[in-house]
Length: 131
Length: 202
Image (cartoon, rainbow over all chains, first blue to last red; front, side, top):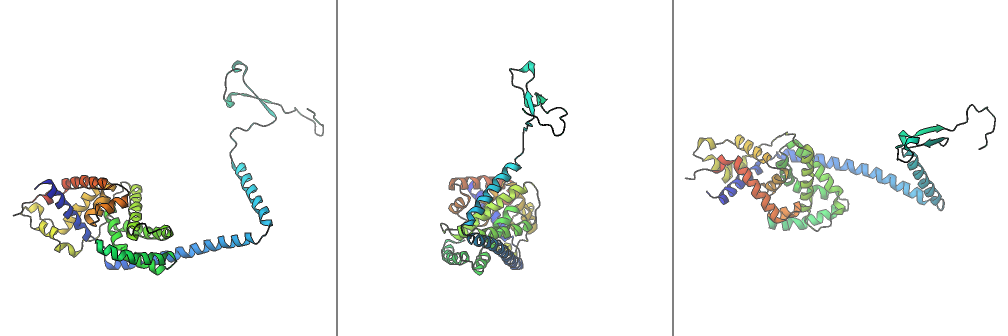
């Protein structure tokens, strides 16, 4: 038997798997379950779309004020974005960062630098400091 | 699916799709009933697990319904939903990886009358006189030896009788690639099912 016949025989053999099927009852149940699932999704989608629609309607009824609301919302979003960004290397303004003298001309990572405290020492309460 | 049947149902499908796109759930129900068996066969033969197949098929039809508005009719509805089913099943298999959890459907009595099965029963060699259960087991073991991509083409071509051109369209590969994958898959399957293939026809 040549290769072509073998391939054809293999194909016929594998084709027997088409007889592996669930019962008709399975498909009846499957269809019922899908209908139920579909309707549930439709209800959820309707609630979501209704909310968006109401929001859009409220916004459009604001008149010219809506642009102030929109600007405010944009500003709040940007401010929140900046606030939530992590501070990688924050040095207090009353500190001076200096390089160690021996490595004055070389690049040193920030953690190896010395931090000099510029805060006034034991400043009496109420006295004015002028810089 | 026979070409002439496909042509007849394609026009019916177009009308049902239009109605479903307009929100007619019953129209989509008809499409589900029309194609659930075929798509079940695809997913089942790729996953070899009837429970996974049931869950996945629900997801496939749900996704098809959600995506229905994007269906422009460039292909038949059947080809379109079949492609969704293939892609979702391949993605599922990638996630499932090597978890070998097989759960087979019973082979129906139709097998008894298939000429290919009758040939099997008449083998003179006792080793090859396999009962239905043994044959089913060996066929499924052989299919699981294949990679997901090779199993897909074997399922579509050998089990579901889909032509090469339609397979290439669904998988977005060339016809040559389809033929090449089939050829390689058949060689692997032949090695595993050798005793069922080489027989003396007397």
